[in-house]
Figure (cartoon, one colour):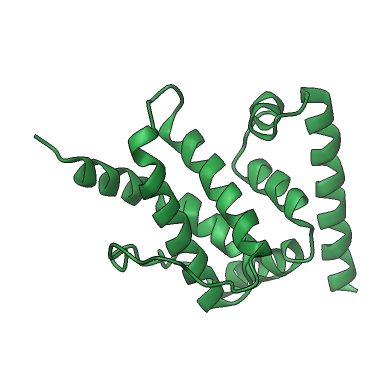
Length: 166
């Protein structure tokens, strides 16, 4: 029989790319990204016993990860408060990119860092191919409002990227 801890580790391992992306979107510095990654993992572990499977695990993970990132971003200390448990086994994935693709991704993340936290969330959902309805459900707003806010966030990101190329 699989233990709760083994089940959790398996699910986190499968979805750690989501945590990595959110960490990278909200934190510019590597140490801060690592701290946020650990804090998200810790918050997921704390909340895991309450996960009832009424939604997909990834949907539940997105909600907790984004909320944790927003709280972490507002935190004055910007450090993990992990007191119990060792999450060092969740090393950030090192994707294999060619230099040109890596440069474009770096530019995009630098531009994303200039957005406000809510716009970052919309861009994250966009990059993850969430539908307008899914975004609305996650953000607790109407589908029409979600589309409007998504378009505004995308336009802000495009403006930032176009200014960078000048």
